[in-house]
Length: 270
Image (tube, rainbow, N blue to C red):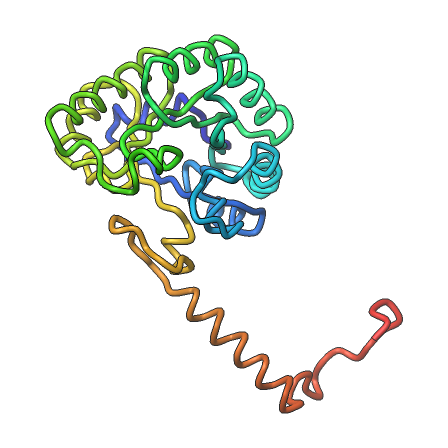
């Protein structure tokens, strides 16, 4: 049975931690889903981990929907959320509704995520929810604001902490069903988690959040550079490199294919 937004909210009150990961294609999505991820985010981080960009800014809405549709085809159980990329919602609430509507209609995701908790972002969340589109918020370090904020921890001063807390409350009041808290002090994340009635999903925000999310490429050791708050649970980069080197060596020494390989057929043509 598919996980619902109502379940995520119930789990907050039951103190049942929410497991979230990112995905960008069918093959990884089906593995994450089968392994028990509760929420799969098609994050605009795919601009960096799948498309090779230096930041999340270049990825387009069409590219996000292409990847989100592939992820959705691989998922049976988890809730699938798609990021709205840079400049696909900031212009107006009407633009946000058009972009989010496409995500639900064309990619089949169950919800969207947008960055920021300022007044305009909260207003867009409210309009999206009124239109029947579930929304996840995102405050703290917001990668789409990299040129203004950098990739540094946010909320370290009292003034900055108060602003982030107000933004989280505004998003909850606007109707968001959950909020990502990225790279903020753990005490601030704990305070926000206690103050709002919807789940908080932390990434570099301490253990008090209602759930945790990681970029799957970081978790699997596929990223060339790890964020300071990430943890690699495997080193697939080294495993893949070793496997390809072994294959290349076998091909060059004519050990592959061996005598037990399947013979060529008319279908293969080779």
